[in-house]
Length: 107
Image (cartoon, rainbow, N blue to C red; front, side, top):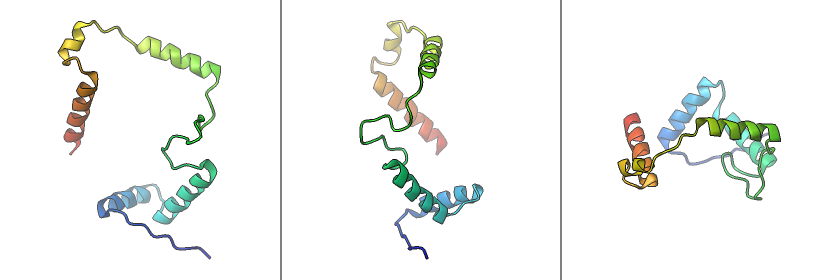
């Protein structure tokens, strides 16, 4: 026998979630069951950073870290100081404005 779990979910989130679950061949019950199993194993919510200050997942090995550093070095370009004037000198505000524009385009 199983216990019944109920939760309050905004109707639109529930509708969209049920659509995706159906595409995956799954159900709300399987989602809840999977969430409980995840919490039992990981001792955290999906997407949350580990609360113990640890890495959460296994730490990458040295070769993986070296490959990451090399990839970042290959994809990094120098930015002349004049570029800061083009974005108003405030990187965080520039990024926020660009993200807002992207989100508005999705609506």
